[in-house]
Image 1 (cartoon, rainbow, N blue to C red):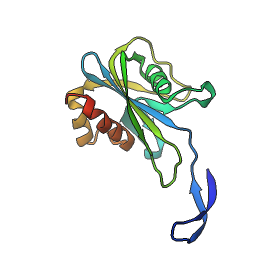
Image 2: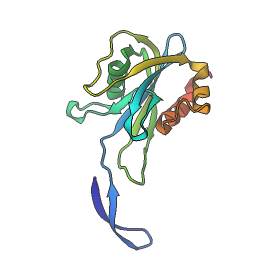
Image 3: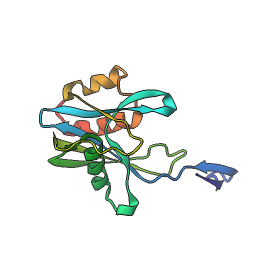
Amino acid sequence: MRSDELLMPNLKKMPNYYVFDFTDWVNIVPVTTNNELVLIRQYRHAVEDEMLEIPGGGIDWRLKETPEQAALRELAEETGYVASEVIPLGFQRPNPALQSNRLWSFLALGCEKKFEQKLDEFEDIEVVTVPLTEALDFVHQGQIQHSLVIASLHMALKHLNI
């Protein structure tokens, strides 16, 4: 986190504008060969509840990963699934009022479970699959509440026949 002295476009000076400098993130919309969406369920302490999400995480700058490499790594680690085709969906700004990072989204097609999960020490993730045709129902019924997940699903729609 940093505090900037900001000279606004209207020339007013804001003495303390706080910015979170996170590394860029990735997420991936995984669709199986059986047209199921692969979701993960995990506890999110800020809201004290479990959330249904898509796999994702930070880009590891130490590994000099591309966003696509990071997304595929997160998919394999969190779910054990591997994709036969990956389509870049672009990037979003998670919260440009407070954060400087981007979220890169990808669509993974032809996903098959090839490995066991390889979770980080503090990850506790349950893998859930749902028919792709029901994915949007999960959003509309409030079962998927994470706005970045909803946005990435929306970005994937033009590539999916639902």
